[in-house]
Image (cartoon, rainbow, N blue to C red; front, side, top):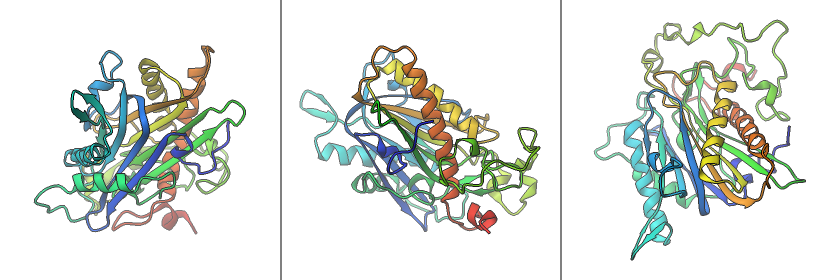
Length: 342
């Protein structure tokens, strides 16, 4: 297993920055992955109830093969307007596809459902366009996790969800891989009623608590029946199985074509399966984007893409756990640290 980069964030991949904007009263927010230069991108959608924008053009058979940014947002379908704000920010800087005298920024987007978390959603016009613009202005290689950006109002099973990120770097070859995720899952990220994350075998250092393996004899046989909303009758979000979705971006500095980048997104979905149970349900909108900035040549090794995809899946699983670990209690949604930290 390669070690985490210096930041242990997706921005350990050269050529990327991340900006967050959130509103505590709204209990929602937006995260934008900005590409320093247009980058090859694709997507894989596994959830049965996705909310996305500009994903068709990411198919390998379609013309446009590079994006300027990717937007992750709360707000359900209202949050898709966050991409408008990102497009405005990019257009002001002359970034996008030039067609004649017009520049059109390419900003695919995905959303999660956080409308029932107790925040003030009584807007006249959805605020996500402005949050998308603000997030771009905050873009940096360093950014907050937990109750930040698209993870602001998220939940994860019985716990507060959040924004997570992780990276893996090979200092010898120069390969860089990273992941960013907004965890708003129907499934659980921890094992039964224990503090141990499903992603524990992949943990590096103490990045999400350093608890090590669960007690002997506890494993995949752990019941998932606790996802039954009847366990938490006061929680309207858990009573409605539609109030979920995990959305993510994985990235590498490898030089990949569009079809290979789509395969990277497909392989990265395994990271969600390693960290969340259950996942990819009919009522989730689980979506993973993949970005290749093209600054590293993996050579002609036919196994290179398999290695990159495996690392991306591991990073995504770690990012899921980190998003929940760093989240703070919000209303009825109790944080991992409040429930288990003692």
